[in-house]
Length: 178
Image 1: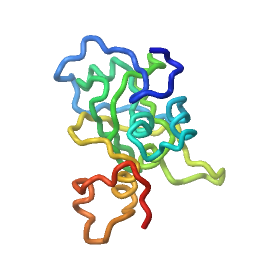
Image 2: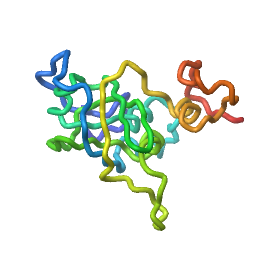
Image 3: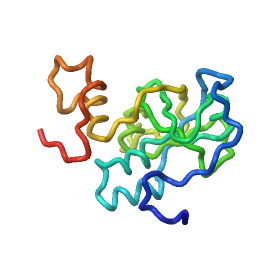
Image 4: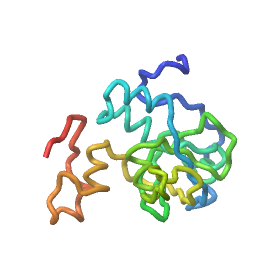
């Protein structure tokens, strides 16, 4: 498989070695950086932002393999990333840019937007880099974009549905008009 192929179910990541079932830590303290990624960009150009492939490209926490071992996570396990601004469930994957122990990368987009500051400091852009975060293993699933919008911003729900949003049936990969 060639690395330039962007028509993939998931982005290409390297294999992990020596990942135990149980990690040595429950919560990893780290620095969050966000930015663009070729797989995410290809999905956006194709207009597939509501699809599974975009979730796998943008809803992924790229980690140093040593940090993954510490948490006891393998490629495509799910992790909960928390910052002072929010939290989100993401896929975990070995970073193509390792080593960078203590730093995680999440593509700019809907999943990252739930964990970065909304403050723009007069420059029209939020702070996308250098955010203190924690990462922990979870059994929760990564939400498709429409489901994430429903969960994070209370889109497509009634006020009384607030406490069960994550357990609702998925909106799927189709456009949602309300």
